[in-house]
Image (cartoon, one colour):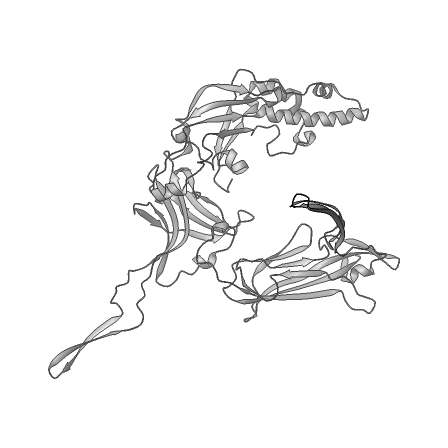
Length: 532
């Protein structure tokens, strides 16, 4: 069967959604034995009809819905319950009623999450989305396991009177106040840290190059508050941070845990002293947070033995008091990583070799880039290179443009000395001027960015390629700036405004000056993950 279809669609949204249209199709079955055409009209949703005056707006429900839905079960303990509004609660709105115009605004009077059984209010904060239509309650910590909660919201529609906001009333004197609630039951709290809640760490999971002496402070940053795993350690256990190798060698230490305030989306952090541990270079390690039994259970520790004498004979009697509880080590968190051949980045850079002279390539003047080969016996991993980790890469390169003759003699004096980033108006990832348009990369090892699972299982890191490149792409992005600035100058010219000498010069050339033989200094810096 051969078939084809097309649709003409007209619609509106987002609330209410409405679509109307026409679908047409043609078909041919069994090589044309049956064939034909058909069309049909359709409507989805309800059209929004504009009305005169503002009374109808006041008759609309302010609260659209709440989540979790009423009666929901096994709800994630890290949930942030929400109230969805039909009317923006961030902005004021002028409304004319019976010829009189006043200013109104929706207020979220309260949003509470309450334990249904104990009536105790859950501590947390309220957050309103940028469009003013979603109000979230963010609990300070994970909800209690398998517990029933009630989310209660109250909103009001208020009129501005002088400097005050007074709750508006209808013609019968009833205040425009809405209340809604939803009941739900939480699921179980996880007994370990879920991988999706790990924001950043040092060392990083699957990191190929961990430099053990780059910093004395290791850390794990989480997007959810897991304080319940650390504030109260189960009876009979002690909680430790442990570094271990697959051959059984391990080192343990205490660690700190606390609510984090350093990063906006970070709620909890674990911190530990790396200087307490000794790492073997080029070895694979496992970092764990574990609950370890304080003592090893003996099989007969709950058993008592006695003897009873019957007719001169001793008869043994054995009895168990309570259960035999054999406590096992419980893992709360796990990360795997490889230690670099070098203890610091500085040690590593001291042996990096640059091979030959930098090569300028590109088919046109606007695509000129400069690269130089580098050779090292411990190549940079994916977390370090921008090609993999973008602007959050651990290694960041920045050209020292003020010390670069090519830049100072040519493009700087022609453009960047006179125009700021705002004046150029070029929005992009790189800075203006593009001093950070540099990178370290190796196109040959894209299938082996970081430590692989197979290497972890085999306890052997096979190594990354030993050759790669430093890339210097300043000209490419300078061209972007020139083209953007030319557009602005051209608009000024088209409005018959007078151009100055520099503007005329920029308008008459479209490519930045080409690289010259000389030195192109740069700074390479190391940034700890998630921290500046």
